[in-house]
Image: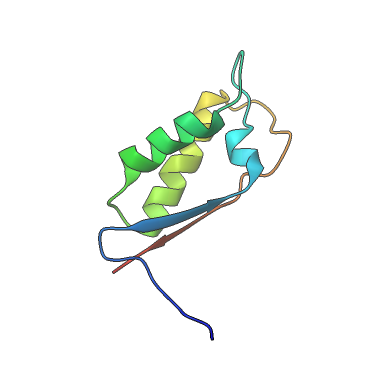
Length: 79
């Protein structure tokens, strides 16, 4: 059997490609810890706004350097 479950109104599911966490800053990558912080900081607005703000955090961290990989991010929110 297949069971479908969507996030509750206060929950989000965030799917990312490794290009998000591997965005390079001056000395290190954006990483999982910064990603977790960005997800927590931007929780609450629409899924579109949340995704844009998280990607913006990654781009700002990398100081808009040329990316070595794509930054793909999908946010699903319960409504």
